[in-house]
Length: 414
Image 1 (cartoon, rainbow, N blue to C red):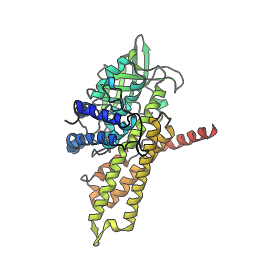
Image 2 (cartoon, one colour; image 1 turned 180 degrees about the horizontal axis):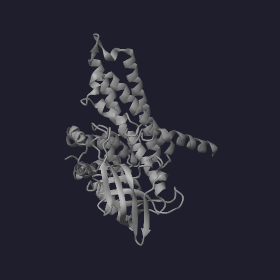
Image 3 (cartoon, rainbow, N blue to C red; image 1 turned 30 degrees about the vertical axis):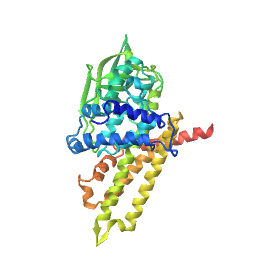
């Protein structure tokens, strides 16, 4: 298995020597030799431990999260930017994005999404605001791959509108009593713990919520079903209900009532991770389409040499590089400590739209072959053709536009 033992720390030392504190080559975010070494090591694991089994896991509708995460955890890839005292590598966020980009070489969308929840969506608030005891109990085993984490935010009636969640956590003595339910929970069927957002008071909706580390083996937690989805087949997605679930108050992350704020901060890293994970598969789809259309002949002429095909592929490649530049700029600003809400939201919007554009356009150039499950573009078309399942990066893109407009107006008024 790659990167066991000293190899993992040799990678970390190399990264720190080359600019783990945020320095860049040529102004980009993830293209230094140190980032490249990290990506190469991860690619070896993907090629040996993941991609050979993707078709089987897609057909079964679930991948073995504990096994895959343990492999990644032992190699250090679940805590690249997490503190070393909890098992992380202690590198800056740009290395996390390099990992996310390389995960895009996995030949499906569900597994990179689940890894993203584990490494960059369920744990940022715990890392930043959690107590030392909580981080030892939940963060350290998550980084090691011993625990599978899930994120409990969305509900049947509250997805994009996070402030409208109804799940409650009422304090009784030294415990919270939780009632309600969560929907679209990635890894929910296999998870050991959940980063749960719940209402802990009757106050204003942006100040009455808290994040809680919730062990998933407690009495009163019911996994209602594994949701059958159009795409993301290999990632289990659960609907979960809570009935008088008791959890110690010490499992609160940070301050009570700050959960909405903490979650908005988590969303920044989630958006950037999601954007990064689409770059490699979209690049691969474009390249494979170029190769196929070059070989495929219609009326004794290569399909690629039809101007409409050639020009469209060139346009898509250009749009992809523009998205990559926006991501790298945003990551560089984020590593330097800047608020990247606007740029992260723009990248999310663009990535969601481009994912659908690339897969839709390229699928047409494959003709009948594009309708089969034998080619990558068809798998990603099913993943991204529906805006609600296209990936964590482009979910609720329509709701991003009015929010971005309001943000722009507030900036101009200052």
